[in-house]
Amino acid sequence: MKNVLLLTMVLSLLMFNLSCKDNTKERKLDSNQVSTVITGQIKNSRNPLIVFHYNTKSDTIKLKSDGSFSASLDITNPSYVKIQLGFQETLAFVFPGDNVNLTSDNTDFNSTLKYTGDNSDINDFLNEQYLIFKNTAINSADFMYSSQIDRFLNSLNTLKNSLNNNYTKFKNAGKAHDQDFLELEQKRIEFKTLSLIINYFMALRNSNTPDMSILKAEMDVLVAGVNADNKEYLTIFEYKELLPQYISLHFVKKIEDDNIAAVSYEDIANIYFEIIEDRIKTKEVLAELYYVFLDDLFSNYGVVGLGKHFERYKTLNPDNNRLHKLQSIYTVWAQLAPGSYSVNFEFPDINGKMYSLKDFSGKYVYIDVWASWCGPCKVEIPYLKQLKNDFKGKNIEIIAISVDEKRADWENFIRSNNMGGIQLFAGGWNNSLVQHFRITGIPRFILLDKEGRIINANAERPSGNIASILNSLDGI
Image 1: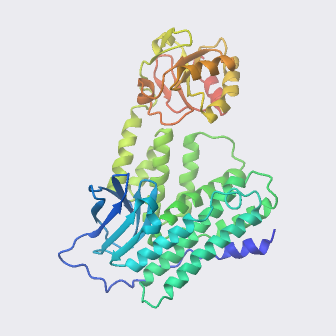
Image 2: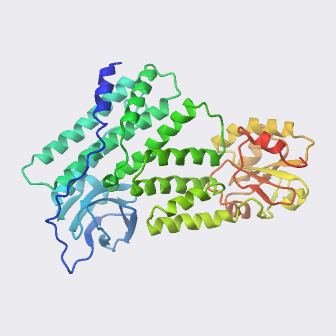
Image 3: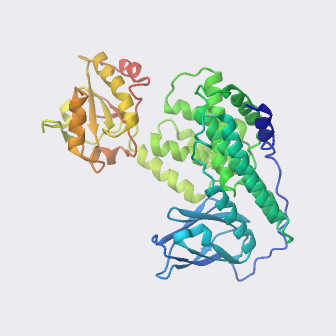
């Protein structure tokens, strides 16, 4: 592999710390106009809703019968706006008080998209950039799924050159464009291409791909040179997508360098937030990262041990809507705190015999919520069988509860894989167990004490550290 090729590309992406100049002072808000207005018409749309994402907000507008719409956005600073109509999307850039109009035919959304009104040239250009990216075979064997690093880099450079060439053409078109936008757009291209590099690296980092050591070495150089602490870039969606990737790279590096073994969700969260506090100092960027990670952790793993991080987020003057969302999730999860009682579920086994939680009173209960179609669930099965053997005769019941929709699928899997022990059928996701424990993904493991109280609503997997946890229980 040509090492110089990668090094040149990497170094071109390291200049993250440029500041935006204030070149928009001549734009005065009309005293009677308090919002930015985007109007338009989408023909042949099967989706009745159009969504506008900007800064930390999202506004959803219902299309009229003829496909027309009018949206008033609370824009207080020059901002990118992502416009989504179902699976179709484009990007616009607006200034406070702008009046923007767009038209399109949903049968070929981006190719027929046309802007009029304020900054129509900017927004037509942004749609051109989107088309360049959309028409690139990103998810192909020549790009993100390439096993050859040279091939990936060539594809990435081709994409980056196409975006930069179109940018240069727009910049030199003769019109005096806003310098803030030009600087932001140049950074947006860099953030997008850098994000692709990181995704590619993370997917291959543990593989035996030739020249992987060279790519890893260059990634170390890249990470060391990144200054990702700039609130001026928070209007750029690609920057906000890059931020958690940047932190995750440092997380992986710390795990590998310090040889940290499997740890709990709480330990993982502590490491993530330690890295965030170490790398990021700007309050606005801190708030963005805290929200992204707390939203993911709360939604998927619960809130046990995360209270201190949530309190820290509150000190960062976060967006009220985001704070309200996290608070709502936190409040619900708090009902699943250790010591709270579990719902008394009741499900049948393969012979139709009904079992409820009360049937296991006086024993610890370890629950595996799974489905026959779930790949990660199947990975845990050998470990679960071993766990059952190791704790046979002890004061604990290990129960598997399937959320398969079709009973036949579950029964066939149970019989063909000799699944022993207590196997219960919940019949889908609409049941008291799933609702009580906020189960949105599987496998999910739950540990209850001898009185049916929660020890951990999101317990360790059989492939993890659960055996030592169970052995530490009093009276096991």
